[in-house]
Length: 177
Image (cartoon, rainbow, N blue to C red; front, side):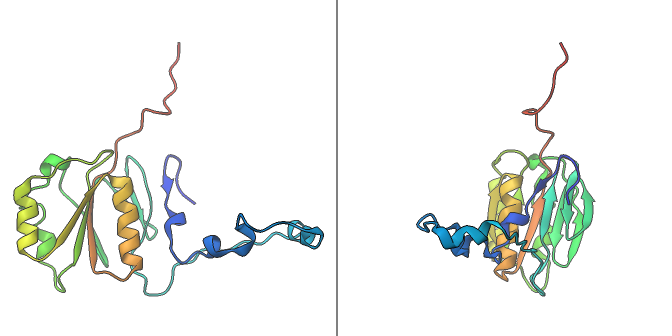
């Protein structure tokens, strides 16, 4: 279960059988013998596959829940480590702040950068440095970066992430008049 205000990312697990369920196919027509389908309830428990790596299970404006570890503020996910990342916004993503990602052994294949609520432009010198080091970079808004990181990790890719929590959404704010 997620904390209030968190967005749950459990539905992103690719090994869930939900999409392959024949009873959910639009072409399936119900007949008289299908009535017992409504008399039984089944629950599929989505569990982490052994060895599938670190997964980001939720995020909020305060931080992230990564494999049950609550991380406050921006973080660097360097499986198996989760570190605080000393950046306040996308403007603080510099050659120095990404140096921890290219010093790793074994070398990461892909670095996923989450820039907050919106996709922001990263300094081109940072992208050039990472390219020279042989690291592909995906820059996305944080919600999509979390999903991309989870997908790449589930595919057993050597992936790291630098994530900045999105600010509090104003879409659901209540005003007193």
